[in-house]
Image (tube, rainbow, N blue to C red; front, side):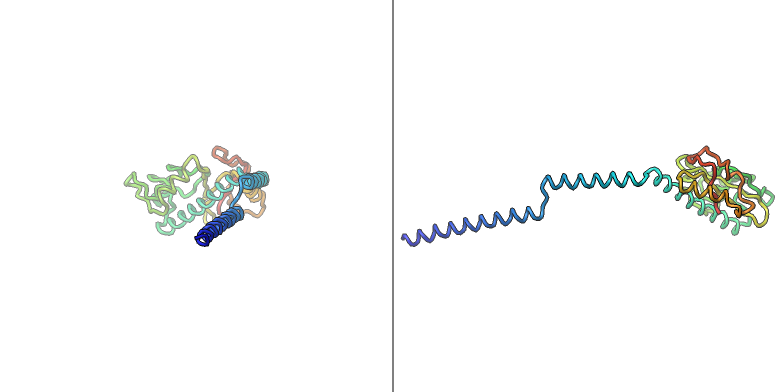
Length: 220
């Protein structure tokens, strides 16, 4: 009887000791895998210092302006491509409705109504915007694209074309970022730039839009 009782007590003590060891092991595992509050605060503090260092090294406003200028340049490339495709397919420039319409385009801002032929504007002829049935458009560019480039939240676009053989159609904008301003300054002072390069684009670039530079970025 005593032997049985001793065995039961010994078993209970062994089980209790085993539970304690398991408990200590669990605590040690949690300590190894987890973070204490102090450690989390230290990590947050380090990340904060790194964030301040990055912001002090990078100008976020310049990055935003550069991104907007890059997007505008891409829009100009697409617009020039659409103009060339329209001319190749129709045999007229998109600001011409009839062969007798003026080919030359003096410096002006591109809007929904300008430049235009006798009846339709360039953007109307290039797109398929619902509206005047007399201006169905060739759908070279989408209506959403037209809305974006004519929005007051985007850089204003300008164009010029002398209309003579061998010259280019130029589309331009006033840059906002310093990197694009430097590019515009460099091209305007380049003595080897094309003879038909818009004179208004240099020193007198319109500042009525978002950009306030003296010189415009022009393509091609």
